[in-house]
Each structure stands twice: as C-alpha cells, then as structure tokens.
Image (cartoon, rainbow, N blue to C red; front, side, top):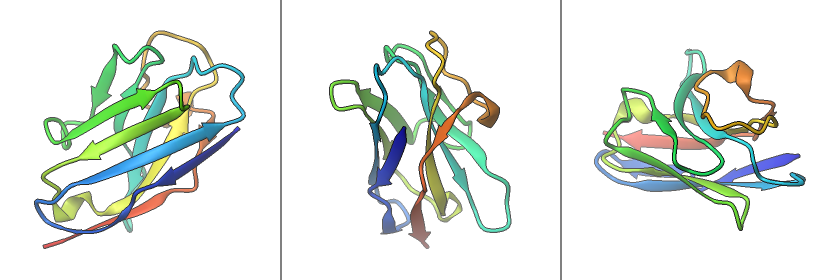
Length: 125
C-alpha cells in the first residue's frame, strides 16, 4: 500500500490550500483515513479523520471550522481543504490509512497502518 500526498506549498496567512492523498495497493477502500501534521521541534499531532463512508469525521480543536476532510472512494483519494490558514498551521502534513474495516474514524496514530511521506505546508505571516 502506498500513500502519496500532494498540494502542499507556501501560502500567506488567511489563504487556502487543498491537500490530496492518493492511495494505491488497497484491494478495497473500506479504511478510515486521516491527516496528521508535525511542526518543527514538535510531536506529530492529529488534524482530521474520516471513516470509509464519509459520514463520520473528526477534527482537532485547533482546525475545527477552518479545515474540511473529504474522500472520493472511486479515486482512492482523501482531501484536506484548509482555509483561513495561520502561521501555526505550518508543518509537514501526513496522510494515514487504517487497514481494518470499521465504521469509526480514529484520532490516534497507533490506529493507522499506512503512512505517506508527507507534504510541507508553510504559512507566512
């Protein structure tokens, strides 16, 4: 299974970006997916997650109301729409996938089995 993120870049505060994560090698896309991020000198933290049917989503408090996670199972792709970006959103953003079919959308790293290589998001003030 391979996860490839794209869409990162440099944006001014208040701007928007859309991250994409394309999955390959999954025989059926019944997995929950999530985005995590890691800022310099900090531990990786949860950002958002979505279950396989997209009717369960979870967000970190710091991004609630600004970020939206969605998925297109026909394309095996999960998205993260980021609006009203702040300098503190600067981080490497990682996509993760869970190989266990379930209804929930976990918010902790240990529940995810596959990880992308990360994409850099830099928000300038």
